[in-house]
Image (cartoon, rainbow over the protein chains, first blue to last red):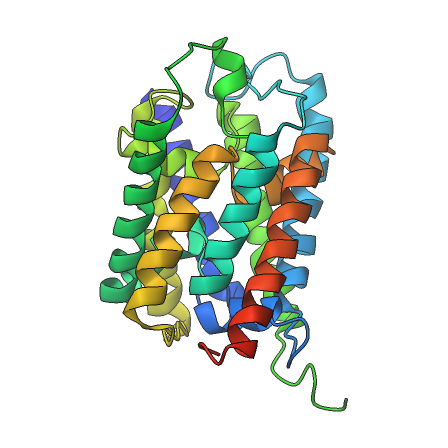
Length: 150
Length: 147
């Protein structure tokens, strides 16, 4: 477990550093990308393109790995259905993203850069997550593989 | 048209993107987990019991500001212009929190990890939040709010 925690900490730090280097820690730059019909700033598209390259390779490697390097299995998302919750939830997320210029990663990374406004957003975000949990239909326990993050 | 992309940072964007993708690859190949920040944040705070073991989620989430801080210390100040005002931060935060739980992911989980896996769910989710993100900023500008 100790080795796994080091992996997670390094991944988180590298992720946060990438957000800072790429300009994605700046809500105005993100809103510049979302301002498609104004002075559009394409930087976010370069970030997304850059991030997809290592991950596309990683998925190919993953197929040949029996287990991860510091864990026992790959409990990866298996859900396939394009249900209203997926589409509606993503649509809502996009609205909040547009309103604030922040998504979860940059908001949490910004706790070290602009602590007060970042903490305000993160607190509200956690409030929204708790609200979802409270409103979610009776907690039907799905097979654990289907409840991961994607 | 000449100055449309005047403020773009394609090189920094690409380098930062490669770092983000490599971090996500470490999560996948090292721990067998999706580097989805909304899910990991919910797991780290105990809002959900699903997903990665909690210590791993906490380590990843703590790493995010640490990495940003390292960049600020090594390369100099990191730009973070918060001009959106308190109402936008609070309303945006609430909607982002609720929406990412309902939709099972955000820019990292669906956008980076899911799209690179060619997951149909993630492609649809990413298209969905991109469209509403563009529309929200367009509507806010039309109404004279922000930007």
